[in-house]
Image (cartoon, rainbow, N blue to C red; front, side, top):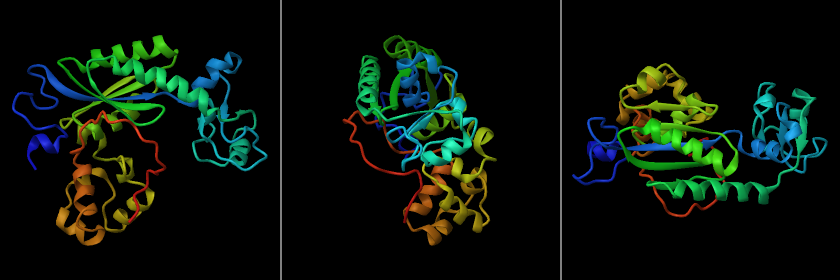
Length: 272
């Protein structure tokens, strides 16, 4: 694999290397709408601004159901996506519970994604609330701020933009920019930011996989990056083992793809 492919770039000599700042370069931006579902509900119910809001099921915590999303105020009290509604109520008894309104979220999401497609970029929609953009620019932060202004203008919603040299870096950068910020993560800053973090800080590595790595004496991103891929293949298989090391090194061969998004059920945890 050549350096361009390892960084997630399409081949071709006419484009400069991803992240090259000596001239116009191609960057990957990850746009993530902040607390999307809760934010849409607050726009519909302005009186809820500043209050803990939990959206899930039919909005009745006495019934079975899980949290679809929670406002930052509710998250501060331990409420998060996937948590049973009853548990959410115990943790945050003063929360306002609302039913999921899929049609409303799809409408707002469609408006936002349409606005992103108006930009001079390749856009890959990842769901209601996130998308990757491949852009050619010598100032990715300026593009990120333009995106935030555009999203706010069409939807009144805030978003965070992560900037990277590939999709992996951009996705993880978003977490450091929240809420409503901009953060850049590159090959140069990768280990400074993530080297000491646990392995499940990486996109695609869940707690079970992190536990297996920890049992091998691999507890941090830096330690995983320094591991021999062949040795790890003996424990995780010839594909997954090297992929884990590649991910820990901040490499991602996956390009931004403008093909229509197809909703599918998946989890963050890797399975074997």
